Amino acid sequence: MPPRADAPPAATTVRRFTPAQRWAHRAVALLMGVCVATAACLYVPQLAQLVGRRALVVTLHQWAGLLLPVPVPAALVSRAFRADLGRLNRFGPHDRVWLRAALRRDRRPASRPAGKFNAGQKLYAAWIAGATLVMLGTGLLMWFTHLTPLVWRTAATFVHDWLALTAGIVLAGHIGMALADPEARRGLRTGSVRREWAEREHSLWRP
Amino acid sequence: MKPEHPSHNRDVPGADDPDARGTPVGRRVLLGTLGLGALGLAAAPSLQRGLESFLAGAADRDPTGLTGLLPNGGGFRYYSVVASVPRKDARTYRLTVDGLVDRPASYTLADLKALPQTRLVRDVQCVTGWRVPGTPFEGVRLSRLLDAAGVRPTARAVRFTCFDGTYSESLTLDQARRADVLVALRMRDEDIGHGHGGPARLYVAPMYFYKSAKWLSGVTVTEDVEPGYWELRGYDVDAWVGRSNGRDDAPTS
Image 1 (cartoon, helix red, strand yellow):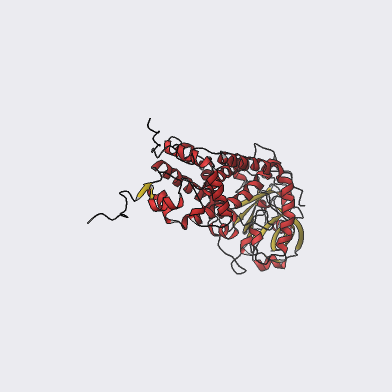
Image 2: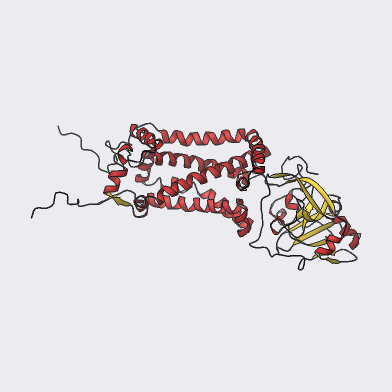
């Protein structure tokens, strides 16, 4: 009996991330989680009332925030991680097509061409990196209050508060999309994804 | 000649990778975010004024209370330095007055309510920046309790302790005797609830709100000022609004 024409190829999964990339993501996620959780305990009255311990929560928030920008530069020693940063940086014509489809709420994979990362992921990565640095800068201004004049500190508090709210909403979107896509989560958990998923969601990616 | 073999090294974007070339939009977005952050810093004073007045108006017509969660959305913020605070009511609450006095005393809530009450309406200013305009506080003048106890001549300061077990505050005797310093029993024309430091809290109208210790349980007359909880962590002991902690807020009293 001849082999069936549609027999699955030898490799049904493809490698998406190396350990360096996965650990960088885990470290950033953990630190970001601590930042968000402690911020909520400092800020939301009901949580502040439940948790109290203000001095401890402030210390946790400050140190998690200080360490948050560390994992990405540390992961630059990995060639694969550097390559992914390059991919996230570059936008081609297909990204424009993807963004237009997203704005039209067109969910058909055929209208959303993407390389290893789609245009939404690229925008998110660049924005959250910039926002993290702004949060770090304004946070430091609020922490070391004797270094700058008052008007700077009030301004830093204002930017820190509103950007925290914005980043929290964007982050919730990021997590929500991950929850809706088990295969994308598997990629970050195990490093591999099903070839069929990669070909559908990232049609231009050649792993 | 054979065509060049496409790169299959998964770690490096090869010539067949659509993301190997293209416009560096990612870098621009990152730098743009940084630029917007800097712009936000510069524009913050005027933006903040506009937003505050808008949100104060919105909060008046907001039955859900969600505007209270927005930054500077108006209203008080709950700060506690301990994990949990015991609840005290009219039956269990006591305020002791002791230290360098001739007649130490212990007041129940009813004792305090029986004394002449003073009502003050001032802005509340927190050292972290939030301000609540025109907030009524009502209670017994601290000077009345000090006079009743008979302060000895060697005394120069007052230390306050709280039934959360940790928080403390202090004033000089002159500051404590001001007419705008109360042991407050009512706030916003209601009995003070647990979340706001009830059933009785200190109210030091002219100073940043960390001086207005919540859950007040002890007034001890001392020889010297003993810095309180936040003051041991860097805040100013003489916490006049607008003239301390490096801030220039409008005075509250």
